Length: 123
Image (cartoon, rainbow, N blue to C red; front, side):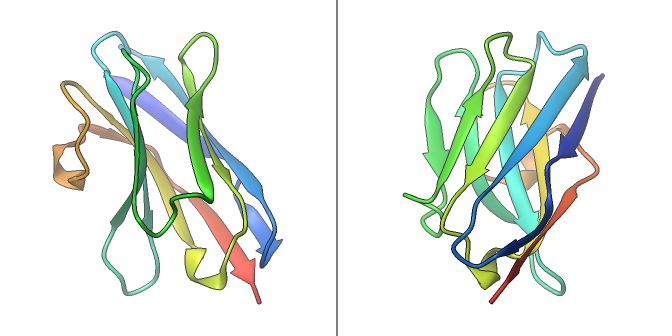
């Protein structure tokens, strides 16, 4: 199995930036896609961004396009989410997840999940 650990969350002012990290360990050879999701209190879990680790293709939710960037490190064992121009509505618990196969946005298709990291954006 794959273990995922998110880090980097915290409190930030509107307009600021944070970078989230997702460190993967275990049986990662079968993980082809890494995704970021977020869930605000009382809200559904929403797709944020994903990257196909084999070819580097990325995909973003409309709400974060132009502000967030997903990337990977040189060893491809850590994925980042750079979050710029943050808004209060970005406040949520952010989760990273991984799956085999192709890039999709449906959370139910992701196999392994991290524990989440809180991002709070103040106005």
